[in-house]
Image (tube, rainbow over all chains, first blue to last red; front, side, top):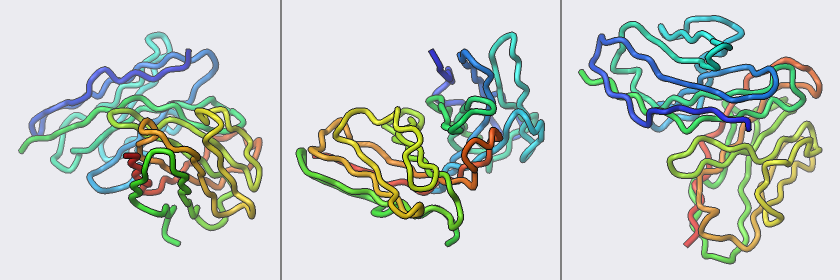
Length: 111
Length: 118
């Protein structure tokens, strides 16, 4: 089955602490992985994708095909990072680019 | 427009009624998606349009759900005989992706319509 799993519903850290949001996937084909973020009262937006290998707002994510994981990391959390984070995948080179989302992790960065 | 626009932002309807949810995509975007997000869940794919045609409707839960995009721009999601289980946030997204491009192009999401069936 095609599935994205985010085991943590809530992750609470203090400002300046490292952050790791976990994401595991199950997919029969060749997936492309993403992290989407939704800040309070804002719309869902793309944070980063594994193919671009960028660092956005200090966040990075490495695709580990052996462990089928795509964890999101940031060395020093900021209060403005507080948001809902969704891991998602689509079929690489697929016909539709429809996304399969995980259930999301709420990141709360305490001052 | 500045982004994907969805109307209404909130809709309360009685069980059994018919509802229509509207999506105005970003001008020039050929691809349009509908997703449904139930409480505590991530968005779930419903349907994908490339231009005027529904290229993939595999996510529609049953035949009470239908969507159209007659002129390749605005899309309407229609739900007949609404049930309490249809209560969710319905999200629309659009992207400039061309059919068969084989390359992911970013989909931009609207704010969603919160549907409550009482």
